[in-house]
Length: 318
Image 1: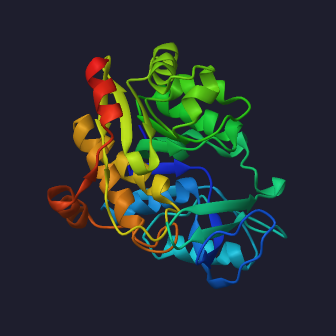
Image 2: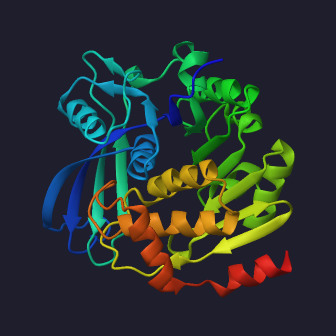
């Protein structure tokens, strides 16, 4: 039996972002001066795993990194958080995944332009059982689908919970879903996957087909929604001074991993995850505002919620 050295291991993307700050987003084919730019480490799974470490979990990240300046920035950022990176693969003569993120300072909303060289693809052959079985929980995204499918298969076969962050359809993702225990998607994914326009019905259809205990989705400024034991649960978003939404979903996923490991009731899990995402939106960058548990709990106690009455009514009706 492999010793559980870690609470969570993540397999998936990292990226080094160039943030471009705009006083307002230009019209199509327009031109506007920008107010500033900065390099900032990010990426779906990498940022979620950094959040896990910030919340006190023993965390490990598995992925690939280029050997350029952006790759160096990414590695240094991970080393500084206490995340184990012993199984990160550095690819020679390859630029790291990058994104140019245009941030509208008037709203905090962002537009992402990204690129990832094929040479950064993670091979399923590199996912060995000992790399997964050393942790109590596995967190993945959908990008290198054969590799994350292999990781999820190993985890599920050994009774390890599998959380997944997915925001678009990936070829072969049907091989991943049967081994997922906690699905947390974007608001668009359920309808894209099922061709069912009603997001409630779409989420239920996915959960029923793949027999996963928890199926959830993030709703941006409206909060989050989950289905457990045949019932829907809705948690509204917090009202904060939002300066940048970059990475909010990634931080939500990291916090959600924490709640799964702590066996928190689903309503509390959504609330804590929403709070951590909201705190991150108050600073610039994908990981610029990762908060502490105390800060999240304080926001939960005192913070204002942006309640969506339609979601609340639908949950009661379901």
